[in-house]
Each structure stands twice: as structure tokens, then as C-alpha cells.
Image 1: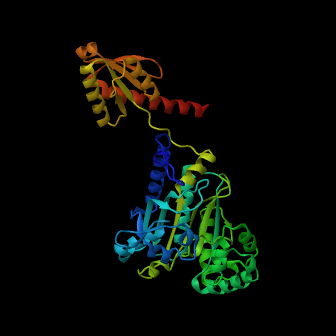
Image 2 (image 1 turned 180 degrees about the vertical axis):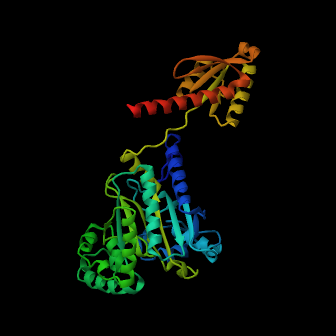
Image 3 (image 1 turned 90 degrees about the vertical axis):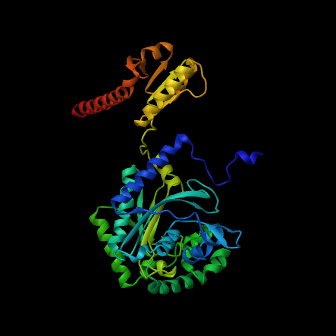
Amino acid sequence: MALLTQAPKGTQDVLPQESYKWQYVEQLTMEIAKLYGFQEMRVPTFEHTELFNRSVGDTTDVVQKEMYTFLDKGNRSITLRPEGTAGMARAAIQNGLLNGALPVKVSYNVSCFRYEKPQAGRLREFHQFGAEVYGSDSPACDAEVIAMVHEIFDTLGVKDLTLELNSIGCPTCRAEYHKALIAYFKAHQEKLCETCLGRLEKNPMRILDCKSPVCAEIAKDAPKVLDYICDDCKSHFEGLKKRLDSLKIPYIINPNIVRGLDYYTKTVFEFVTNSIGAQGTVCGGGRYDGMIEQLGGPKLAGIGFAMGLERLIKVMEASGAEFPQRTPCTIYIGSIGEEASVKAFALVNELRKEGFYAECDTVGRSVKAQMKYADKLGCQFSCILGDNELAAGKALVKNMSTGETKEVAFDDLVDFIYDEQVSVITCGIEQANITEEK
């Protein structure tokens, strides 16, 4: 029976006292994305397993160890999405988005699922905000995507982030790099973990991303990909850096970044932090110029990123970023007796239609208990309706902060609340101006 009241391991509930933070982050990321021309796209939570095997890569930890895969009633292999990019690419191909004007820009907020050890900011069900661009192979596009991420973090007030860049080249120049890696790791193969031994011939770059401390130590002295990239990839990387320099966006070159998924080419990047421990990547992304064609679409370049919202919110909290306050209840209308309860109900619904957060008693509390409840809600105003108020068509409205009361006709209640809130805002602006002048 205990399992009925416990969330599955690696999942979490977002409670009302925290959900406003999520709403703020989700809304702001989408609004900034719109300024850069990105439009929201929504795709299914699950896809055919082959999609992820093909795009993510069958030598990655995600495919080998972490996917939630099952057979449906039609005996089809189905997987809960472990990341957002593959599903977005599939939807763009299927729905003909890539046949029109290019580039195509899409953004998304999605839940993802990976069976891995839960830790700070990393859960088995997690959420991502991400964006993808299809149809541009220019370094200007890379810079634009990174600039958007930078602006999101800056607007959210996230501090102490470092942008790390690398280029992992194209399939042509990466072939030479793979040869160098294979030669290096073969000299240490007796110390490699079983998973990396399986990757050695097929995809040695995955060894660079292994979580085993032994493999990570060996990988420190492995050949660096930047020493092997071709002239075209070098030119692309230089073009990206020039544009970031022009925007004064600081970065460091980290030749060890390969990202965890197979579809990446050329530019890869991460925004990392030390504020939440060792697992410090807040956002990761890069270019995937061959994936669309690999999935059966046209030969089009692509680039994208994703940021984990659980981790982002933790980083915001750790770095002292400000969240907007939860919306307090504007007014609580208490009541004594059935007729007053009906009138309070009607007034509250009228106020709600005008955009005010209003409450009344729906439990049958005493007047004293109603006022205690209004205080717990943090109401700005309150009043009590009884026989006398009904007869007069007026109520004594109390400002819960100052204790001041004013008699207000029922028909004037909406205007009164509106005027009072405008007055508070005006006073706040005037006080801020006075403080600034001093």
C-alpha cells in the first residue's frame, strides 16, 4: 500500500508552492525564442524505437542502458523519448516543414525519460526546453542559437555560467581522428570498461564521454579532435568564434566536449556551472548536419540545443536569481448565512471575470475561520457579508496590510479594487523614483 502514496524513483512532484517558478521559466524561454523566430512544436511522448536507435546512436549510453522501451499491443517496439531532437526532426520530415522556406526554426518544452541513477538535477523523468534550426549550415546560425541561450540565461539572472565550445569535425575528417583514437585506446584496452571495449572499433569518441573514472582518466591524454579537423570545419569554427566575439559573449575552448549523442557534427557547446556539484551542464547542443537525411528527409543541415528545467531552476536558486512572486489573492469575501453566501459567490465570480484572484467560503467555515483562511491566502482585501450588508447593498472592505476599511457598494466593488491596485503601483513607482534620486 505504501507504493500508492510514493512517486516512482527518479521522479518528482512539482507542488503549488514551486510550480510558479516553472511557469515563469517556461513562459520566458518561449517568449525569447519567439524574438529569434522560433515557433513552438509539440510531438508525441513516445516514438518508434528505431528512431532513437538511428539518430541517437546504438553505441551511446542512452540507447544501450537508459531508454524506456516496451512492446505495445501490436507488438511494435515503442520508446518513451529520451531527448527532444529526434522527435522534432521526425515531425518536421513527416509534416513537410522542410519543403518550404528555410531555415525552419522550432522550439519545445517536453518531458523526457532515461533510466539512470537519480542525482542533483538529474531525474528519470525530466523536462527540457529546446530549439532546433533546419536548413542552415552557416556558422552565423550556430552563433545565433548560442546567443539566444545566452540571452535566456542572462534574462533569468543565472550567474557563474561558462560557455564551452568545441568542433568535432565532419564525417570525413573525423574518420582520421577515429583512427588516432583507436590506436591510443588500444594501448590501454586492458583497463577500459566492458562498454568502452565494445565502442573501441565502432565509435571510439564515445569513450571520451564515459562516466567510468578509470576510462575518464585514460581519456585525458587521448588525441584532441581539433588537431584533426579539416580546413572547412576549421573555417566554420573560426566563423562561429568571430560572431560570438562580436557579441562579446565569453567562451572557452574545451577539446574534450563530444556530447553524449551520435548525431552531432562540427560545433558542439555546453553551458556549465559549479553551483550544483559535479553534474554541472545546464545546457548542451550542437550541429547535426547529417541527421535529417539519415532519417529519410532531405539533405539539410541542422543545429539545436536543450536545457534541463530541473537543473536550470536549481542553478537559478543556487545563484540567487530572482523569481516573480506568486500571485496573492486579491480579495476574500466572507459570509454569514445562506443568502450572504450566495451573494458572496456571485461577487467573487464577477471579480474573477475582470481578472482578479478572488475567493469566498465553499467549506462552511465560521466567520473567524474564514478570516484566518483569508490571512493564510495573503489576501490584499477582505470583507464579510451578512443581513445588514445585503440590505444596504454595501460592504466594509478591509485593506489587510494597513487595516484601513472603506464602505463600498457591491456594484462598485470591481472599480474599487482596480483603483486601489493602481494606487499601490503608482505609489511604488513614485517611491522608487525618490529612492533613485537620493
